[in-house]
Length: 529
Image (tube, rainbow, N blue to C red; front, side, top):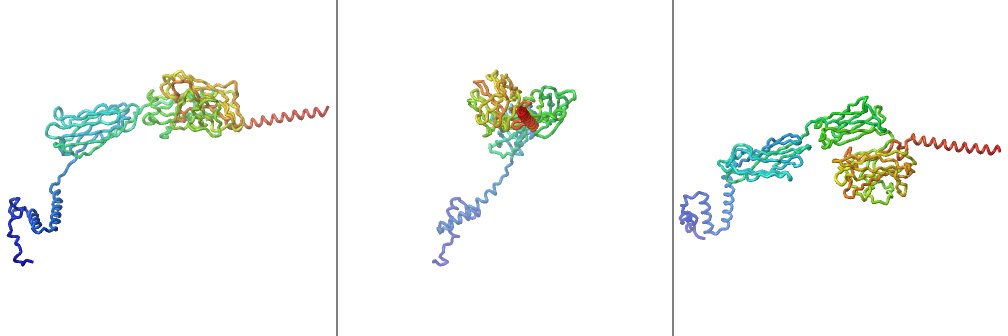
């Protein structure tokens, strides 16, 4: 080890390499650079590894300090749909503005993509606004409308100086509210871009908009006539009408000298398109009644806000079977008619609720609908006609003039052999919307409408157009069902009413008594001989 006096005096050494390279005197260097150079010299002279670690620590410390010396506050502009909420009516044309508020930032470019509900709205125009100026002060780079996808795109840049710092309208969009449809559509930005004079992006806040399409309040007249089953007028009927969607109820106006009823409702307030009205119709003494439902459709609204609905009150014994998409009961025999079956389905007695379903009937097949149970004793319907109410699609083109056949049948227990009790073939005429065909099936004179225990009631439908299937609605929306009505002589299938059974039993007892009496007379006569 060298003595203290022999150690190198670094204070007298020439400037280090770092100082020479910068041509600065050591005393003129900032303290931090002086420190770095001194440390570097020591590292070179001493070759100590610890110096490397120390340099790394100092460099990291300097990098951490730099952001604090370059801090900058960036403001954000705001892009909005104005007004943010607007109410319109179906068919109305209206405009909204896309506005920009720079919030103190100088803006040179703006771009957006705006989406809307194209089932409610159509965009018809997108016009440049005054935000970036007029004429040669700006250039529109993009202006696109796509109603199929439901969006608009717009982009514009400033070509004059300076940039824009005051709020204004970037573009005005014109929309058309689609006729006869209500609802709400959001006007939603999916892309928004703002830029400054150096084409640097500016953060953007966005405010979306909403369009509410509301049906205007207009008179809607519910009216019609009420009849008894035999066709006579039911004067002064009791007609209670209920909106099943809101539970509101009204009593229709009637007269003691007329079978006409009417009720004026306010469309858009009391009811709107798509809601369901229920009519509870009763005779004056309440002994006969019928409940029907119908859904308010756009077509009915277009016909002048009127809906004429005539009601026939069934006699108490008459029953109704509604066609359904459910499979028939396993207990029911399959109709043995040698034909291909498109359907072997169930028909519910007295239940008309549904889900809007339908099926297509081909001319090569038949559709069968079976009662939910067979006859539980011998019974008969008499020789009277049945009523079929079949709702179909619009009848157009090749379908016009072709025939829908309805047959009321008895299926024999066990074999499923078919006996046609009543039938009718209806030639369908042209109709432009869904239509309910009211068909009277006349009694088949070659058979009786008598059922033995275990026989089954069923209905067969057939269609004869070879080029177009017939669309038939079953278990459809309320008021759009297909159904069958039995004659007024219905004994109460599948079990006769108690009064019928009592009469039958009384008649049987009388017959037995008569036979026994005659037998007793013969015995006495023979004894006297």
